[in-house]
Amino acid sequence: MNDADLILVGGGLANLLIALRLAETMPALKILILEKDSNVGGNHTWSYHGSDVTAEHAAWLKPLNSCSWQDYMVRFPQYERKLSGTYHSLFSDKLAAIADTRLKGSVTTGAEVIDLQAQQVRLGNGSTLCARAVIDGRGPVASKHLDVRFQKFVGWEVELAEDHRLEAPVIMDATIDQDDGYRFFYCLPFTRNTLLIEDTHYSDGPTISTAEYGAEIERYAEQRGWRITRQLRSEEGVLPITLGGDISAFWNDAPIPVPRSGLRAALFHPATGYSLPNATRLAWNLAATMSNNRNWTATTLYECTRQESLKLWNSTAFYRALNRMLFLAASPTQRRSVLQRFYGLNNNLIARFYAGANTPGDKLRILAGKPPVALGPAFNSVFRYRPPAENKPGL
Image (tube, rainbow, N blue to C red; front, side, top):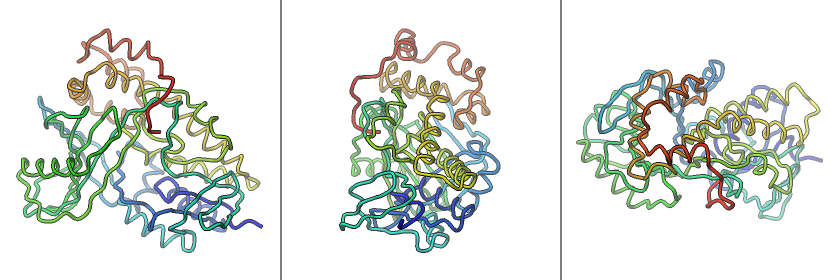
């Protein structure tokens, strides 16, 4: 006898959205969420542009949003620009609270999973749980089949002595000294005197020095004239940025075909690392698949998650080519020039970039003109690229 209809391993964003959607569409379904830490959701701020999701998905996400803004800012040495378009953030503690209310009895924390198969998991305490299907959402796993670089960050949510004077999020302030790849600060204003400040790097390696990044946050705040009176919390992370690879081999490499979600399924924007729009789409598509096929099996869900991943990969080749231009053709000191040129383009083109939906005309416009890097390396990185035989640790 099964312990549940569906077991979700990992209590991160993707699996929580799946559980919340299924609780609405199939309330009789018995779901178990197994999280190794003491709480689900972790310690994160997830953000997305309003144009990244459909109107239906936006309406569904609205109660989960913690903050929303009508526009956003970018800053570079040559200009400062406000771009129109809504921007939203979700806080992990709010998502965890909503999950606790809507998924009563479904969440088990402190659950160490030591073996996972398509229909059962074995826990560190020696017990085994069985279900019609198991979904693996435990985050990224190293794969020799995907060539990745990294977006890594440390963020502080702080209280200030005075008004920070920000009217909109600053999603990229690259006016600062460049170091360890392309570097910028990311600022989300929550109230008039509280905000999130993140030191972010697009780097070749995943290593983070938490103390050094924290010192840079303090330095940046001082440069902006902000006096930090209290650090409310901190967060850090490393997101994969893909340059190329073989997505079919990535899926076929697993000895057992287990359904996957989130970063485990390579469901993220290849150039930005944003995963919330894809996590939302997967939650909806899984729920529709299960609702429309009452005889669904683990194989059904495996094919659904795999096809979602392959579809995203096949539609985003252009963005991986841009990543190669940034990481392989541009030196670390040149990368800011690449981004500075891009954010000077049309507002709607930039919105479609974040949504992964640029038109052929958009792509020509992005590549048109004299590139900010040497033409030969730029051409080779885009058209003569061959992924390495072995990838560095990451996804």
